[in-house]
Length: 144
Image (tube, rainbow, N blue to C red; front, side, top):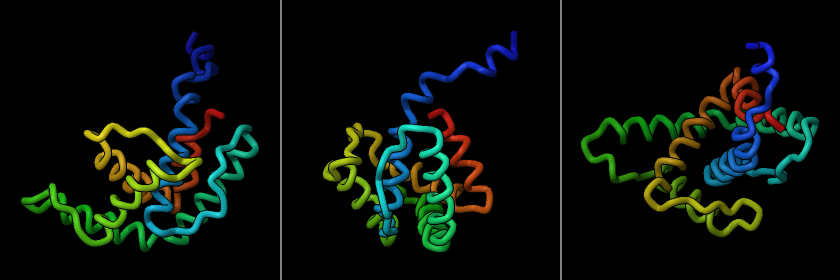
């Protein structure tokens, strides 16, 4: 019985995969990292190629991502966590602007969770930029 459940496709995860890919793209673009393409893959082979590309791109830009996450950690540990500055503020502003204006990446984000979703995406990018980043990306996006 357990084997049968392991072979089932998680429909919710499949439906959320394009949304997750868009969030990753938005996070990358909001950091000012150049993307060659923002295509949403429609097959497993396209997804595998995308995962390879994103893992390599994020590893090349890991210092920038680490700096942004380090500043975010400092801000979060300070008393006034509602005030963002520096690279984190720039990232948030660009992320929210792109999520509303970029044709292929527009996502309707509830205003109450905009910042938290953008900051979670930034934290995810930190994990994806690590040496195990390809594994983390595959685990998040493997349902196509």
